[in-house]
Image 1 (cartoon, rainbow, N blue to C red):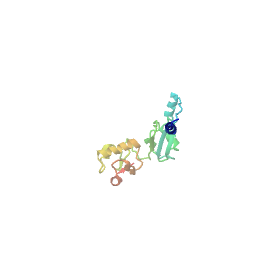
Image 2 (cartoon, rainbow, N blue to C red; image 1 turned 180 degrees about the horizontal axis):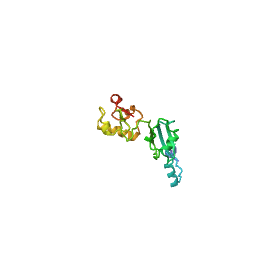
Image 3 (spheres, rainbow, N blue to C red; image 1 turned 120 degrees about the vertical axis):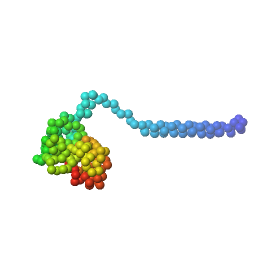
Image 4 (cartoon, rainbow, N blue to C red; image 1 turned 60 degrees about the vertical axis):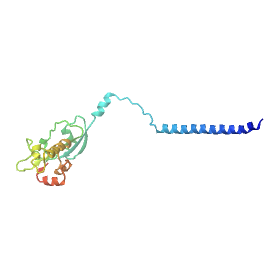
Amino acid sequence: MPATETASAPRARLRLSIGAAVVLGLVVLSGAVGLGIMRGQAQPTQTVQIDASDVEVADGGELYVHVLGQVSHPGLYVLEPDARVVDALAAAGGALDDADLQAVNLARLLSDGEQLVVPVAGAVEEGGGSEPVGDGLIDLNNADQAELETLPRIGPAIAQRIIDWRETNGRFGSVDDLLAVPGIGEKLLAGLRDLVRV
């Protein structure tokens, strides 16, 4: 056997070994990458069939109503979907002796997320006017835009914001609630405090 053939055989084996090691390394690397990708994927979820009647029950199952004012136990109550104002008052322990139940429609159906405020007797004048006789104060819960604009530093924009806040959040619980109305700060509130009531 010639000497060149004997010397090239170990080289061929070395090249073959290096090639095999490179291929083995690539296989291990691609396996590790594939395993990492598979671990990062979310597990498939189980499919559940929903009956249409179940959806109706879930949507109209209960009402959350916030009861405030002249009731024994103000708070958040969960009521039946066809509940009325009288049911909310009963859940809150009933009205107090000084509650003005004529200002509240006891038969009205409630809506989810509603805030129900039971006023004290004399707080709301019959006929919806905002000024009781001899008081001279503007009632924040009943005043229209024109009445609100008679207040100092209250123009059409802020008057409308007061009405919008009242429609969105329910009755004002105190004069200080005006601070929640955009555009009314401590200084403006101080000038209104003796001119308005709830």
